[in-house]
Amino acid sequence: MPKQDYYQLGQLTDVTYLILLTLTVPRHGYLIMAKIEEMTNGEVRIGPASLYTTITKIIEAGYITLQNEDSTKKVYCITDKGLEALQIEIEKRERYATYGRQAISEYKNGGTS
Image 1 (tube, rainbow, N blue to C red):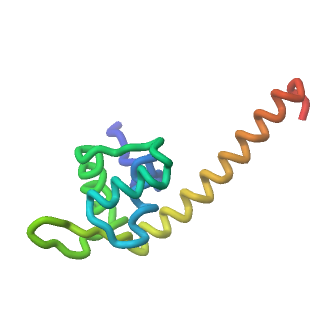
Image 2 (tube, rainbow, N blue to C red):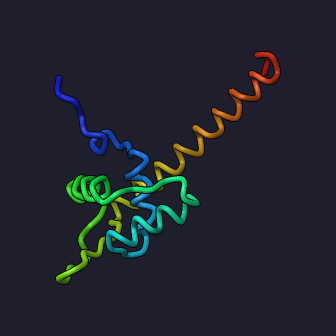
């Protein structure tokens, strides 16, 4: 059976998630990379190859669009579909964080919680 695309399954990779977070305001590639580094306090740095590979995939998925292009910069922006996927992903990640805190609490309580 062929491997399904994450986007067809409604799943976002960490890189895609971070890119979508930055594109609630139109940005070009360098600003996307800089914003991700700023948002994560330097914890995450995405290089150009990863960025543009992911951008190509999320344009094809309909999550972002090329807003305009001049001779030196392509400016991207999130679409309604991308915003909906982002909102779903935020809610999912919040639930997962809750599950994680519960699991750690159970461990600290000796497995009784």
